[in-house]
Length: 264
Image 1: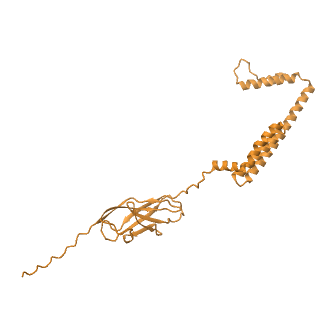
Image 2: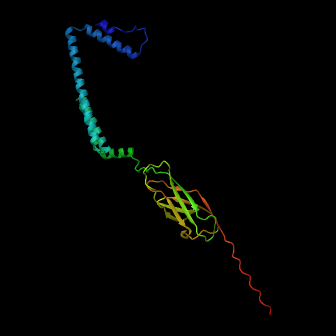
Image 3: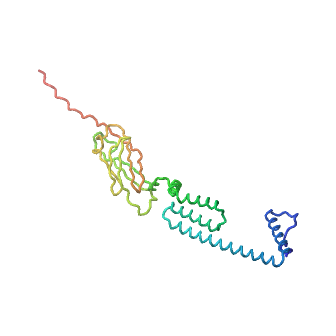
C-alpha cells in the first residue's frame, strides 16, 4: 500500500510546484499511518471518514435548502428594502444551520446582535438603499430631434406693408414609425424681442401676420428674425437660423406745385 501511495512521486531533487510537493508528502504520511495501523484501526478510520462524509453531505443539503428558501423569500418581496431584509434573514439562518451550535454563547450573541440590528433598523436600511439606487429625480424622456425653418412673405418690404412670417417644423428622419404629429407653438423674435406666438397646424407650420406683431409693424431698417419651437412631450425644441428682414422707407410723395398767383 505504501508503494501504491508513493507511486508517481518525483525525486526530491526534481523541481515541482510547492503545492504538488505538499500534496504528495501528505499522501505519503497517510500511507505510512495506514500501513502502521492494525486492521481494526483502519476499519475504524474508514468508518470515521464515511461518517464525516455523510455529515458533510447532510450539512450541504441543509445549506442548499436554506439558500433556496432565502431566494424564494427575496423574490416574493415587493421592494428592494424588504428584499434586503429577507436576504439578511436568510443568511442568518444559513449560518445557524451551517455552524450547528458550534459557536460559544458569547459568539452566538454577537452574531444575533449584528443581524438583529439590520432587521430592527429597517428605516436605516431603506435610506441606505434609496441613497445608493436612486438619484431622487426622474430622468428626462428621450425626445425626437426637430429642425425649424423660417420664411417671410415679403422681403424686402416697405414700412407699413403687410408681412406674414411662417415657421415650419421638420422632424428627424430617424423618428420612430407611428410617432404622433408634433404639437405646440412657434414663437417669433426680432432679436431678443418677442413678436408673438402662433399654434402649428396639422402640417407643422405656424404663421404670424405683422398686424399681430407685439408693438406693431416693424420699423424701417434691418431686423434679425428667428422662430423657436417650444417642443412637446415627444419632440424636442429647436430654433431656426436667423432671417434678415429689410424694411425700407417708402419714397416721399411728390406734392403738386401750387398755381402762380396773378399779380396785382
